[in-house]
Amino acid sequence: MLTDDQRWDTLWAMPTVEQELVAHGVTFRNSFVVNSLCCPSRTSLLTGQYSHSTGVYLRPSPHGGFPSFRDSRTIATLLHGAGYTTGLFGKYLNRYGVGARGRALRPARLGPLGGVSRHDAPTTTTG
Image (cartoon, rainbow, N blue to C red; front, side, top):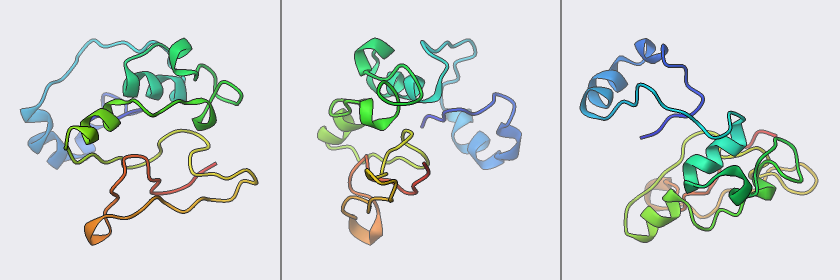
């Protein structure tokens, strides 16, 4: 479980997460990111690569957001390929799920009980 763009002092509002996950997991008390912008940082987290290798090192296109990201090999696709069930909740990258004219794209296929069966199916679309 990984959260992104979450302040260190906000877990007080999520007591179940603190009790059930944080208490049994690993906490990195002194960690760093290679790029503090949202999309470049997320792509580095997903791939383990620096921004110049992911193709995403700015916020707007042509070098920012989902259109710039080559996401065929991420921690999610590798885990999914190894048989793990993976999921993403929230925003993936800017412009993900948005068509050429700014219209929302339909999610990928749905799995059993309506669950997403692909790691990259959007749950919501925000510009």
